[in-house]
Amino acid sequence: MVQDTSVTIGAIELKSPLVCGAGEHLMYAEGVRLALAAGAAVVIPKSANESEAAKRQIDGTDYALLDSNWQWLPWDYAPPPDASLLCRSGLAQQSFDEWIEMLRGLDREAAQRDAYVAASLILADLDRCVEMARTVEQAGLRILELNIGAPHGGEATRGAIVLERDSTRVRDIVARVRAAVRIPIWVKLTGQSEDVAGLALAAKEAGADAVTIMGRFMAFVPDVETLAPMLGTNAGFGGAWALPLTCRWLVQCRRRLGPAFPLIGTNGARSGLDIARFLLSGATAVQVSSAVFTGGSAVVSRMIEEFSGYLDRKGVTASVLIGQAADRLQTYQDQPSRPGYWTEFVPKEALPPL
Ligand SMILES: Cc1cc2nc3c(=O)[nH]c(=O)nc-3n(C[C@H](O)[C@H](O)[C@H](O)COP(=O)(O)O)c2cc1C
Image (cartoon, rainbow, N blue to C red; front, side, top):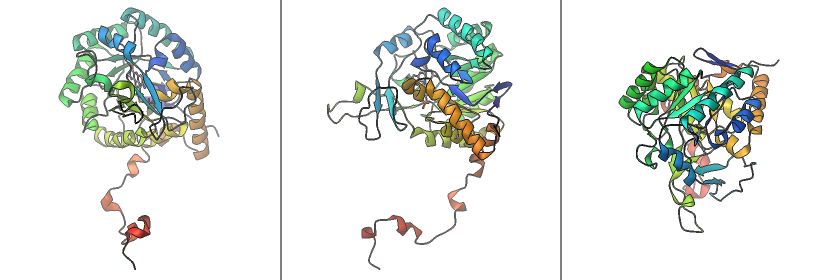
């Protein structure tokens, strides 16, 4: 039997959990239309804010795909699933008016496909962000994502991109935007915090409708041939390896915020089974960006097909998966004691003779 792939975030029903997260491939209408045509439930075009420096930052960007031995891979739109992406990035280069106009039209097109185009604002100045959020709502857009955790915050020109790690400020920021608009607000948070769940709780308490967990990490990758840093700088870094790290925070968020509060997983999803992994950890939806940026929009349809095949094989709907593994998490103390079992894993040469 074909199983139901739909999930619900607040008042919004999504035809599947697959959300295309913002990135360069979604800077223009062409890329957004491809993602919608491939079946994405939500597409989030490249984020905007008022900062000229944030716009200009993308002129100085660069990208490296690396294999699991940190060797460069060709940029051929068919990366192996374990490829990691190292890059700088920046924000949408259109004027805010052009950007809003583009999103307004695209969200209408999305509605014809039972999908959404969400507006993503990256915080710079809070007053300007609040004004922009109002404009997003007035333009008729149906979802606002507020990203206050972009990894490049520490490297960008001062004031161009705010990376918020303080729960009191998260609360204040979200409360200000919440007071200004009525459309659903999804708050995207950093993974570069000792307490991602604490930030998520602050966002929830300030009126967020969902939280997106979690932004990529910053990394430094030395190149053994040139003896220099790859790409010359620290840079945002993601890969399939990030999935379990994200899932751990999803589980903690589910515990702190309660199972009813919608979590959106991002950072590490590369396949349809990864959608299932995020849902099992407590996410209701999954934002996928690098896999589509580096593999093209066909990745979207492939992931949905694989996820749907998995649901059919397991005989469950998408919403039934949410939190199943998270709720079975055990502690170290729950584990049975098996004296000597550990020696089966150690090279025999490292053990004393019997
Ligand atoms: C090149 C690139 C550009 C990105 N640009 C944005 C952006 O403008 N706004 C945003 O909220 N997230 C942005 N992200 C973050 C992604 O939307 C996504 O949340 C993150 O990369 C983790 O998911 P992934 O493993 O599927 O890439 C960007 C990521 C990449 C790799």
